[in-house]
Image (cartoon, rainbow, N blue to C red):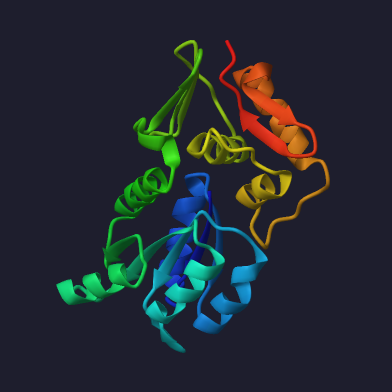
Length: 222
């Protein structure tokens, strides 16, 4: 999943980026409302982590724009405001979840998994998707074939996560590249195909279906 972090505290931002990237998320960061507004049209994010106290205004003011431009992105508010009225205001304004600072990064990870499920991830099946001999556990970042764990690289897991979170969807090449690379990453024209090829070798060639001109999706073939 690709995440946009809107946070002006450099130490917290750096810590969250390091933690989330270690969990195979792609993270882009901005530190003001102005930067966020300029950045929103540039990519698609599965989740937005939104600080409320920003140098140029209240982060709540960004929620209507997020709803218009990224209606299928989950928004988790990160804030020191801990009053019940603040939480109600944030949720009523369109946020999907609300996390009070200071927080444990593992709790943020659990919240991300929860909003991912609510926005279509695993579609009520829990955190595990089973396709024949292939099992994908989104909660534990675990992939098995015939009950045997499969070792994946961070980029391979990022691909599996985005395809498994919405297994019925055809994922375009552009959307998969969005899930793999942030603004600061270098890419070349065939990197996606290389990762797809490596994944097929590890989980079964028949498990990733190519729809020519459209993209890729996980297949439930025997």
